[in-house]
Amino acid sequence: MSGAPGKDRAGAGLRTRRSGRRPGNQDTRQSILDAARAAFAERGFDQASIRSIAGDAGVDPALVHHYFGTKEKLFLAAMNSPINPAELVPQALAGPREQAGERLVRLVLSVWDSPAGGAAVALLRSAMSNDWTARLMREFVVTQILRRAVVELGLDPAQAPLRAALVATQIAGLAAVRYVLKVEPVASAPAEELVAAIGPTVQRYLTGEL
Image 1 (cartoon, rainbow, N blue to C red):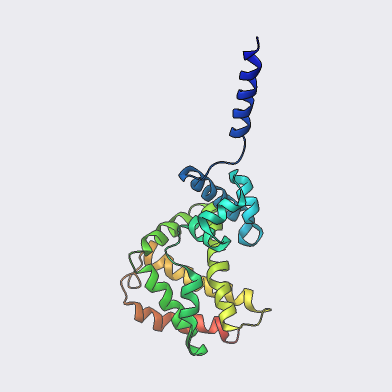
Image 2 (image 1 turned 45 degrees about the horizontal axis):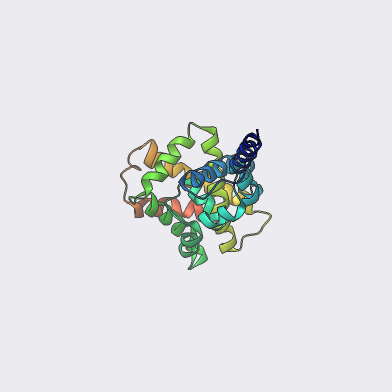
């Protein structure tokens, strides 16, 4: 008779532990990434928070920081991004302001033409047929690339959203035509030829008259 309550208490303790925070392991890391992808797609990069993502994954926010560091790094991991725009965009835009368009196009082509570009191509293909992935791609392009370009170039905040969106039409269009649809002669054109052809249009969208 006396043993049954003890077993009940032990069982209750086990049940309590199971319903608590998950321990740090590979399954937990994947749960965080799954929760992050859903949060960024549904709420956007700005509205999603480490705390809410941790709650969705059933872990402590400190564990998210342990695995991924900042929200920006978590986003890049969730996107399986082959690049870190925080490092590359400032480098690409450093230099004469009137050549920023060419440097931005050159950066994009250098990434997509590299071995790491395969992941980006796969993501773009998915974004063209999947609304969920398209929202993630949009958040990545707007918050991680175009927003950084706006800051680096010191653009007028009132015009920045339109300018950034217009730049996106060129960058996304170039990527789709060259790497997904593979329309010739763009698909096989030398990178510098495309930089010379598209760079001035991107430059006008960035700093010229609209």
